[in-house]
Amino acid sequence: MNDYLGSNSDTRWINIFGLLFFFSSIINYYFLPTFFLTEAFVLLVILRGFLKKTLVKEDFFSCFFLCLFSFILIVYGYLLPKNELDSFAKESYRFLFIPFMVLPYYFLRPDYKKVFRLILICCRIYMIYNLYEVIYINLIDPGGVQNTIFGSAIYAFFKTDESSVYFLPQGEFLIPFIRPFGLWLQPQKSAFIFPIAIIIEYVYRRDFDKTVRSNLWYLLFIISSLLTGGKTALITSVLLVYILNVNFFRERISIKQFWFLLVSLLILIVVSFSLWLFSQSDHGSASAMVIEVNTLFRLPISSILFGVGFVNNADFMGYGFTGESFLIRIISQIGIVFFIIYSFLFAFSIVKKIDKLNILVLIVLFYMMLHYAIINVYYFTNIICLLFYYNNSKNNEQRNSIT
Picture 1 (tube, rainbow, N blue to C red):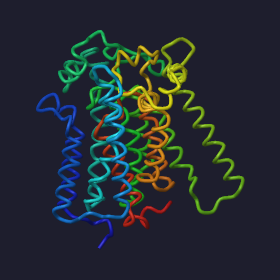
Picture 2 (picture 1 turned 120 degrees about the vertical axis):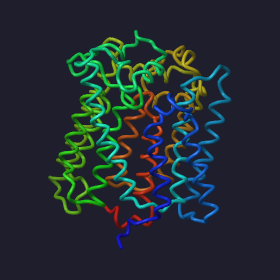
Picture 3 (picture 1 turned 90 degrees about the vertical axis):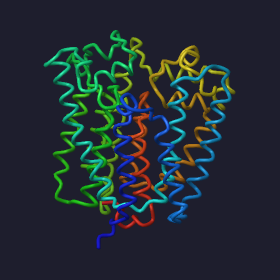
């Protein structure tokens, strides 16, 4: 029997909630609020796990300790500011809630092949929907966003603000077109399904089905990223495929090959990050990221070290921030000291080891944080938590060795 076979019941739990996460924004508009969907997943699975006594204790308590620290930071962030909270606080809460989303996997023994296959099917089908939306709102019914399948949900998300720049043709990649909104109702959010899809494609072929033509799917995911107009997602996708095809993790490698790979990767990272900085520039020659960093270090020293709390949008902009980068925002909210502590705990409790898969996932997480409004997509963060646990759990150690 293959070693990846697991409980059908556990597999159904993950797949059902995975589909709910996948359609969460649509469900939230047409049926019922989904704000506490991730909390429901964590609570129900943990309660079920304790009742069935399925907890894997190894490394559980290190993750649980990180959750406690995250909870303290959440309380700290909410109590520190003296103003009315808004979506900025919710996004920070979602980021700090990520460790909690790892906990359920310590209680589950799914058939990982079925789990990753469903995720992959969702990603591949989503490519078709992405293509449909691009063609419909740009060629069939130019500007007719409201007439698309989920047009009413999109308008409700933007509070029917037709003047929003998202409803107008934008010169992404020098070709003016209206960017597709996707299932998560915002272009830059939805675009990030494709970098994640590349990682899932890699894992599925590596561990479960060697016959999959991964390079073809990688190309299709990159093209789909291009069609979204999402520069950050496109840069991330290209970087991932580069790492996957130029194997840094070969056991035998010459000194020349090592330095060539190292220098080429550093160049690509610098170039991709520079392109990202340029692409985010809405302030003349200076990029938004430069403004964010400069504003951060103009804060009082106590605020730099220990944060300003989960201030609302208006007050945050009042400091001089542009709001373009969630990474700078969370650092300014909880402070450099707590962010460094959190990062170290995250590395030791969840990342645990440096190998190809973890590096790929960290790259996606980093670029998600560089932008805004992406880290709070349940589907993405759930897959990231699943990948970390899958790759690092002791039972998968042999299967997940560097290849």
